[in-house]
Length: 420
Ligand code: AMO
Image (cartoon, rainbow, N blue to C red; front, side, top):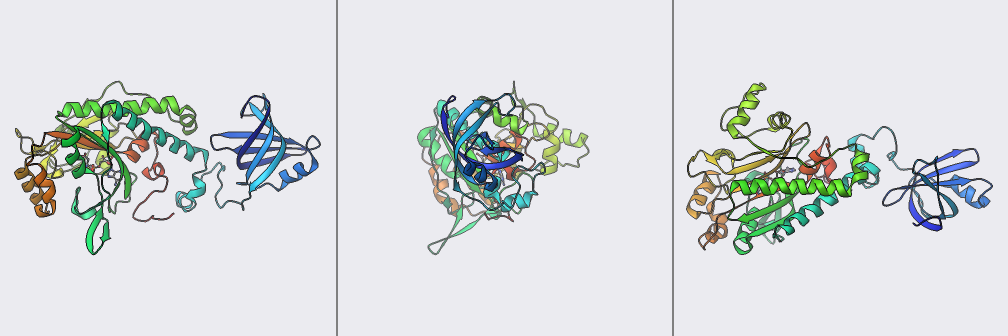
């Protein structure tokens, strides 16, 4: 659409308001909104008649003049010469422009319409920037992007949370993460990442769990915990900067103010326990933080923070046990701060000693034989390494202050929802 000449605009009819001899069509285009102003007497009679027949969600083609307008909310309006209905619509079952949002289950039932709402579109435009920025940043840091298998034969993140797949008479599973594969690849490339879906058959019905979610899964050879923390902090800040640059209007629509953080903090597991005890939680040394504890903890912070070690018992088998303090393992959690804070990522240093790994797999109640290729690979000159898996929806949820994680997925998957 250009200048004040004749333009052709396609869009969905959001609302038609008629005031006597004048009608306003609010048109939702693919990248914004336009107002079409139709005056009886100034347009051919059949066009005026057509306007009366237009309903919400009709997809139309408008040919007209774009003129600046001091009264129009958008600062300009379209004076049509012709309007063509490309695809009509029955009245939509949910009100896409109502003051009061439809209930969440109804929105989900008609998600294919719900995603046309400007606020929902804003969320996914930001998500698009987030994905692009993550890639940009990691490429700039010299990472190689790879794709790991989605159909796999073994649990990587705990045996109970697997979705089984019938695989030609064998049992296979949907990947819980690319963990084992990204570790294998780090020995070849040094710095690798993958952005891929993860599947977890968790029956958790919480504000922060999905059964299908996306991870920014990275692995680096020869890193120290500090490097991993710096890298992730810079990654998130880069994502925030790009969103601020690219999505000004979307952030405005969502009522969200974003800016990069100045610094991050590091607190020990024991310090986290102390904070929680002070807040009245009955937490014992050795436990992992549940949803309530996590929420209470992050709300104490205004800057992102890391917890760089956890009691060995609450870490997955692939995390390296601290050689100096064997009660602890190098699992590093990265926490988003504030009221909408949440665990953005888990990561850490990996165990690359096959003997110790075998022992850890046994302790986790799994059979080392199911991991034979993984255990074998560490015999072949394997460099020390570490990495992280960052949850895309969790990060988006907390940056955009979304009440539930489901809003950060186009078609969320939960124990109750698998359609549409
Ligand atoms: P973890 O299981 O902690 O670690 O997952 C990494 C990150 O993914 C996100 N996440 C989820 N998001 C939505 N719904 C879920 N059910 C869900 N579970 C996890 C979180 C979490 O921090 N292999 C390791 C990572 C690594 O060590 O590199 C892993 O998968 O943001």
